[in-house]
Length: 439
Image (tube, rainbow, N blue to C red; front, side, top):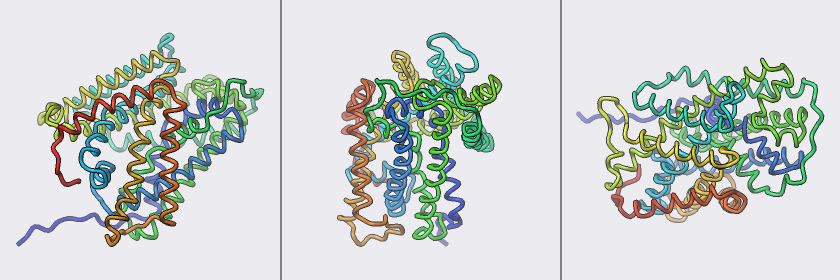
């Protein structure tokens, strides 16, 4: 008698998928990026317009990812798509970039959000944000090495707190008396591409919905509904959040804030309101940071198993039940990036510069992969097809190309550091074990 292979059950409704989408997209970045976007756009209408455009771009990208994931379901994600379309070496280079730039940069980036809001509670001097960022990276890396992870219920509670904090800020922003609105300064504005890079950072995580394709009741019908409804919910919340900030502070006031959510709560409810909001963002940051550290180390573990020269980071610690060496490597790299951010005026912005070009380059390759698969395998079963092909994926590829250009043209020297780190991974790609079937 053979062993029956288990398959995912098609049990997820549109409401389930929308809840999943909203939960992963809305994060702590929205409490930091409005200030930088305001300084970058310099105009209230353009400021709101880029948040609406971010929602549209998110729908387009998610639809393209949905076709890829439904056609090639598996745990590999982008690694899977890139290996099949561009070859194993490109996929290995992506894995290196994910471990050395994208994930570690995200860890440092969220650490700086934590630091900016923790400084509202207890300042630690001129490098307060960097000190807090380093402390939480060290602490959560140690927790993960030990093997003690926060429970799922705690994670969900903190994610819910993030959404609740956004709703509270919206209500407070529209009901509280406004400060004297500060106009844009002469130095503000002029870099729409950079504004979109920052906005889409806040919309990040939309690609995860594509991996629900094998468990949706009617993927052909429900996937589009879930993507459109989920993006609409997030877009409405983000646009309302930023309209509330505009009403309270004006474009110049938003641009001048280091912790805009706490500043708004301070305006409406005094110091107690600011403390409550800052504490909520700090807790949510720790939740996001813990999850990023957890998954990031697994990326290093998987990469090291394909590249013999770094095989020591692909060792699984049986006693702890985790890739302890990978956690240590990731922690050291993340701390180095916190140090890089500390050398600049704004560590958060430096981490955006560091990660953005690398992220959009590989996302561009994923978008082009959809055309490659349509050409190579026109008869392959596609449980979900992106609407209006080839227009929709062409727009997605154009968005990626524009944001890749913008992340190089309008960002600082941190972008060049990120590109240089990716280049260091090219020899590893040629030392990798070739010929493996993507997963």
